[in-house]
Image 1 (tube, rainbow, N blue to C red):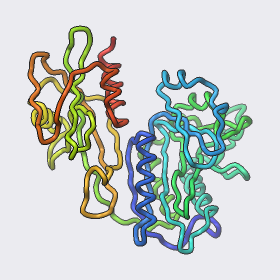
Image 2 (tube, rainbow, N blue to C red):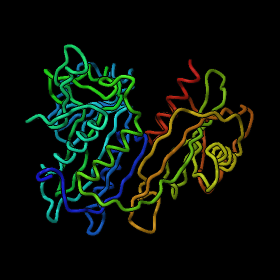
Image 3 (cartoon, one colour):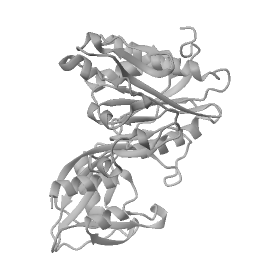
Image 4 (cartoon, one colour):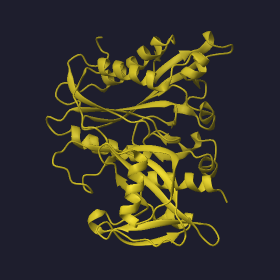
Length: 380
């Protein structure tokens, strides 16, 4: 494996999440980069999926996005500038995104070996499922000659690479296409190439395509092998609930928003709370609603479960290891005549407001996304 990846073992922790909003992922990467640069702290391998987003690397031009910002917003696709290398690319459901947050100082100061190790891991993963992928000089990532899969095929990218390096700390990483919506790539010039396409395991294998968890398992295995990572245990992710609480107003639904007291962050939110050991998500949502507001009603799930880094400036921890949380979202309609009884140790005031005002008050991506799903569910 000379010149590919790293042979000497390096301690690392694996963080694996199903869904992380892209902007939350940027905060997550910064926090982990600050962590791994400290002596004695292990590298971090973060494996996750993102919401639909076009990301612009340092060499990108807005001309590489062929549709308007308004069109993207209507289609639920974000546009985000980044500090990684490369041009415009796409992230979205059905794609495995991996962020190797590595400290290359101390004898591993070779970004080329890291890139080749990342490419090799993707090549080996594709090969396990009968897809022959290869490198292409001057074009980072892995490529497939798709002629054997369909008539009129050509070189198409199966996995992308885009890194950022600061004082030998790496961020950003790779995106491996299992079954994303390839139509989104038609709205951009992906990675600056006008003469090459983009493929996925699904587009190549059809019904024989393995499921996302299976591919993720194999990609994780090959990444650890190719990057020379010796995996250490990591702290389990905590679990919380978000229960958007609403009532039927005179003209339209009204959302309950509460202001957290200064010691709890001083931002507006709906009902949230941590799950207790042995508690189900639904039980936790009912309990938090009663404890925080004195309200009860009909609880229904929202199709949203997402993870994020927990800012140690907001929640203090006894040791420096980064913490992560996964939030499961619900909504609950409550009777219009029920009074709200705030828990004064958490919230200082509340208001019932329309969707637009609630969205403006909300601080975090997950809350805004849950609100958008609720608004779509309730309709005009």
